[in-house]
Length: 486
Image 1 (cartoon, rainbow, N blue to C red):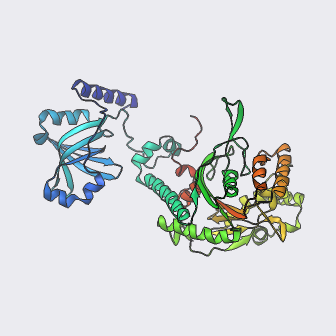
Image 2: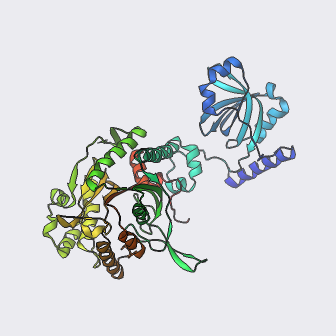
Image 3: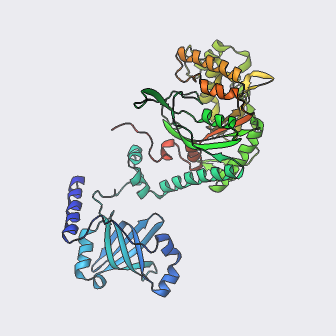
């Protein structure tokens, strides 16, 4: 039947209920047990014959002459109910048959009994409409080939696919476990500004907006880093934030314009200590979601137990590509990049070209958790250079199954070098690099008051959730991902 015809029928049923003096969307409901609690306490409920009131959505209806079985689902599970003409009365039973549909949210009152097959069931004394569905639930949603339709109607996806709900339950556990670990290690959770006068903290193209009240342009933050480091200056030695950031960049399986990240900063810790701390954090998370010590992703089994190996950025090039990174200048590395289909625009420096090769040809080779350390200094103007080799930073990324999960480094706290690096970034911006960072005078001024030596860490909640749920796109693990208009 065409959808418009079904909609008209459901509207007619709603109006019929209202003519009988019943509100199809009443203001209140009563519930004594959830479905989960009913299943848990079923033996005592059977013995006591205590009245039970369940609320939930009708997910299935099966009529058998003068009786009807239905399954209702709430946020905790499903339970079977049983409506019988002899118990309800002919008029009430007829109303239930004619005006209630799969998809309706109802309140069912009765006592628990066991069917001939032994299934615990609620024998209904009365049924009340709580929310009349106007549009029908799809019959063949599971395995829907048009995945974009699933993302656009996530509410249906959650109703029809239990495994989708499980993904978001795991995501919630990841965030909860992260908070537990950091809180237990003396970190303070904060919220910093999303609207910023100068977008900073990451090399990324920002979204721009305008504040009418003050007549000024603002940007959605690309990272909370600079605000969090100002709090280090303010004496908060261990600080973190879990929240949204926004980058006006391309979209693919591992990128979404808005995403959730954790960033934390710890005074008097360096990047080497931070790698050890990271292993403990992730072990806590992996255990919390039941994925330790082995994670299965597709047909690959990944050993998550530490300690995890470290390999230098330049060493990756030699190990896997037979390229001696240090021996090449910018132009010769650009020629190597062409072999991988990478076009090196003129404003890109050697480090940026190396990073493009790393992302396209090297990262996917790292399946077991691996710390890639000592990235080219041109890539991170907020990181502290290595004292014995300032061409590279005291930095690491954690790669698992080819996914970059973490970016971290010893934080630059020298205001003079920070200004110099910001000014170099401004030159790149003028040369056409839209992802170059800006000179943030307020941050440099904060550094001049003195920021303690510190290490900073960022990981993408979306990417970690995708990895731990065997998902192949961030859109699977973001409730409402950014979508192209129809």
